[in-house]
Figure 1 (cartoon, helix red, strand yellow):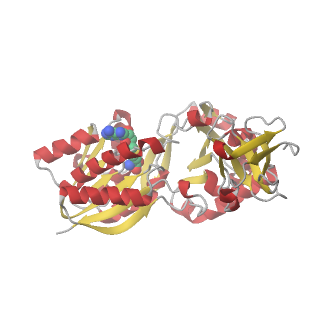
Figure 2: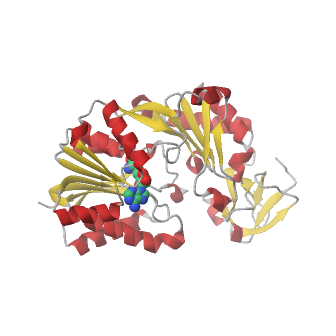
Figure 3: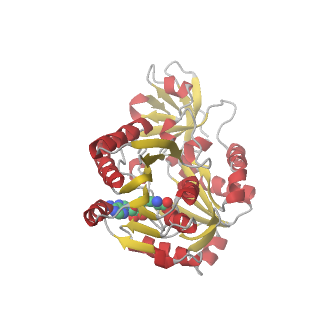
Length: 401
Ligand code: SAH
């Protein structure tokens, strides 16, 4: 911590910080006093020199600084990081009883900007997505080991946002225990909602699994019946839930052959009747049209696409894509059928997503009822002061009879 250096904001730019929003955009910075290196923690001051927070400097990012502590008496040190990790783990105790795959640290919402940690059984998979997170890497790992007792730690700092932060990809085992275990296999077995999954922490997407959809997979376990179409299935999370629920035909569509192969392996692992499942490697946009041309219909359709809008500039195009798949999804539903439709684009707000899906219903000329709004589980907390954290939004709709 360098107490003589500081980041000083332009006049009036302190308002969002006073509401405890942790980001400082480049346009808000008036000056940086002293020599401040990337990832260094310094005081963040308003133009009239009032203390706002202890922030990490990110010269390579449009988000020029992120606040890790709003308390002047609590500069960022190992003790503070330990406390934050302790609080984060405590919040998740009840989820840990139901699943051994869960998010332990969720960046800004846990007061640890850019830090992600997912637990898979006795493994921790971590990402350091901000300059400050990188500075604290060894402290965070030590505190994670101290608070969880787990020693197999693997780094997957390879998210799309790294380039925007001016940071480099860094992947690999972080402990000797992780290195030794990886010589056997990179596939971890986990149990979620009484379903077994194999998760590839080295080659899989994100940290290996979409832990954020746990509660929605549980919903599918309640809803599934008849025929189910799971679009953008990845390794079959929703598909397995549907098969387990007794659906007669479950079609999974994804562009990744390896994800589909692991999905089939997961179905076998659970002793499910794989003859009731179809794993189709295809582009969902084309496959939905093919289903329509063939006159296929379904009782439950899941649309869980990748992030169509990685930034604000791509929102319009993304909305056209969301609308397209939702029109097709609605058309393929049997009367009384359920549609679970998602967006994980942080740049597309809940309101906008609702409007786009409503537009799809209007264009398809199909009446749909909103049954509930869906989101990530409580291990992906949303800080009221930080709405950007609410990236996953979904709607459970039912087609009128
Ligand atoms: N529903 C999944 C997660 C989906 S992630 C779960 O619960 O685990 C998005 C998936 O979409 C990825 O597996 C990716 O391979 C796939 N994908 C991306 N673009 C696609 C496209 N145009 N057609 C088919 N699959 C696509």
